[in-house]
View 1 (cartoon, each protein chain N blue to C red):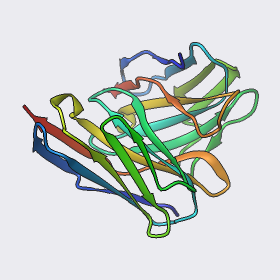
View 2: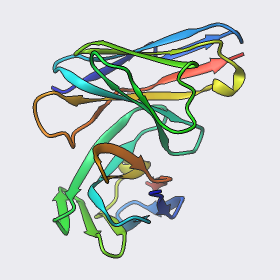
View 3: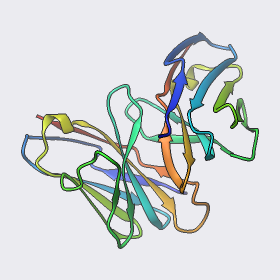
View 4: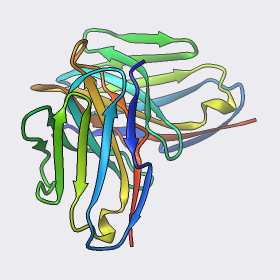
Length: 117
Length: 113
């Protein structure tokens, strides 16, 4: 149980286009989901906290107009990278915190590798 | 601002050795600390979670300790195996947001057969 999926696993796009990444909790409901970014050989940096039915909370330095987050249901959150540029190339990982159970718990998705040409 | 550091950044050991990974954090007001494993190009797998009131947690060959007052945690891996090769990340939660994780810099472990 407690599986989180991400789609796509890899995406290559041209500079200036927008890319949507989906994060789904497959066998549990998640009121809260998190989006992280990881640069090569670096640690994960929290980008934003996504709560179902409300606006996401962005970390300092993260452009909310560039990284659009939607959490329309208890099992799906999406991250849209708008007008992508090569510096947006990174590994994006989501996690989901079960609605029922300990708030400590986060289950992580397998990640999405974004390459912007 | 909480900062989490891990030492060493990389470690290579022969199979069978016992080893210790270190994690330090600057703000001792944490809610809990977790150790994760990340395989190349993959997501994270939670290994151990230590609540702030606990001193250690054990799972199989893994033992994690926590000294909150000094801002340190260690992950001990006994009888290492090539399958243990991965990046190990520690993360803390604390302050007002009990589920907001702040990750360390990671230790890349290679266990040589």
